Length: 417
Image (tube, rainbow, N blue to C red):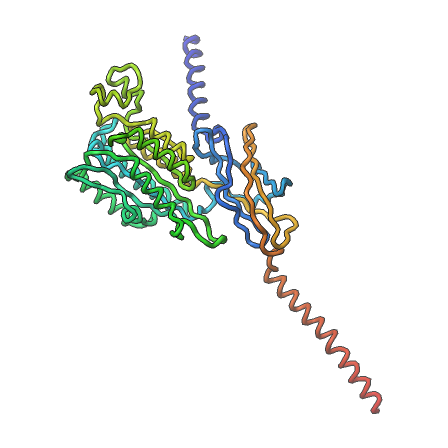
């Protein structure tokens, strides 16, 4: 009896330890840190937005103020804890998110938990918007179905892409409900063209004339632009290899837009086991009828699309996990630390460079340097100090200006007497 109890006690203790440590954010392995956008300069106060990532691109959200060090022109700058905000406290800059939602017929199919996949995707997007509202800031989303076919044609055009709503707008839920109703009434598409919608969405964001995404004033907050691609299939157009190579080359040249990809269904490995291949399923297995085209999701291509843009590639077998992965994307989009510091020895027009060094769990990561210019010497004097200076000046004018005349008048009176 005692041997049995000891046996299970050790294993239960180990299981609890694994669960606790696995759930703890402090175990997230720091890999890289970057200064997002350009430093914002207001007189001699400099504001940085900083992201920390794991090796797989997932955000590290558990860092503390003590983990950060700032180097300005190679010299450390003392940080005031009051001027440091965690990724949960920092109000995000304007955010623009395009959801590219697979509208192909395979989204009618059920996931591993028995829910229609389009239902799972739509409910997860609704939850995403609710979570974004709680985070604060101005987050705008555009939900764009895509697909091709005789009975359905969902081209991704600038007009469709530009249907943005703020996340607290009730019109988002109405739009999603209408898209769901239309889909299950037979409005779904026969074919999945993934690469063209991605290209159109990146081109839309890259338009330099659109001041929402590319403000001309240096003082304006730089917008964050993100595409979330959710698909349960693969690009089934002719000349797929050439189309994919062209897309990757295009994305590599447009590095201002991050793309997160979410495959909805079984991974190729699980699908291969399900149909008895004893290996991961491939696109060629679909063409050879060894795997149903309704079940194959091109994990490799989705991962490459995300990786080349600095995004995250995830996979979800059911609706609950879809929602969890979208929450991960939200943290990646909005999870920025905010650091404010005073420029040492500021001089008008002086140019400086800054780096962020993060040390966490014996791991060090150093950002690339960013340049900025101090346009005004020193901070403006506060109102109390200005009032004190004015009153002091008036007092000096009274003493230095009126007192001599008053004394001179007294002397004149004495002389007359």
